[in-house]
Image (cartoon, rainbow, N blue to C red; front, side, top):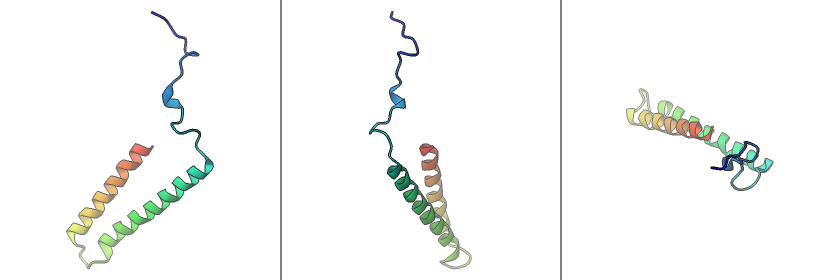
Length: 78
């Protein structure tokens, strides 16, 4: 059995898959994230405000589902 020291071990998970990230990529991700957040907020507010008062239960249900899907993506992305 060959023993390797920690200085010889390289973790492949620590290296980027497609090269080093560029500042442009980070800015693009930020812009897309902000636009998506705005769309989700508009959807959530629209479910309660626009149809009529009291809000339709189906609209509220779909808005909650959309928020939960977005929350799961945030958890996976962090």
